[in-house]
Length: 119
Image (cartoon, rainbow, N blue to C red; front, side, top):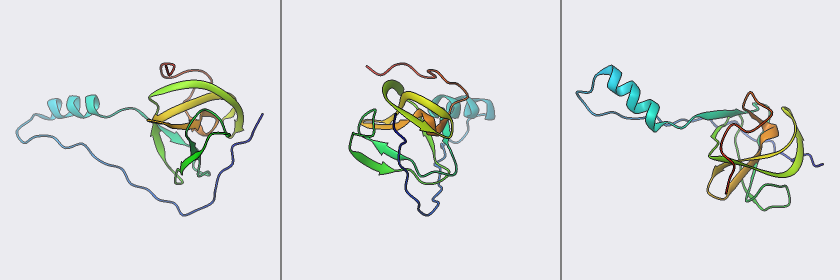
């Protein structure tokens, strides 16, 4: 069982917003934004979490998420067991192509899968 290392750093926040076309009703706008925006999950606010190229700490480091980050979970995959603030798990969340974070650092409200299994 491994404990995924994290690095200290400066907090960096920023979110993008969806734009809508002029003349659309507020109901249409809400539906358009809901459809385009993927659900995001909060990373524990006290950690800068390492993003790996695969589901384990032996995979290369791709980047480090800033404090207060939120991530989409495209799919999930079993891998190395990791202990973090949200428990011990072998689930790894795919947040982008070739980018994985341990589910032990992501608040999903569940100890199991919340997205499809990665192929």
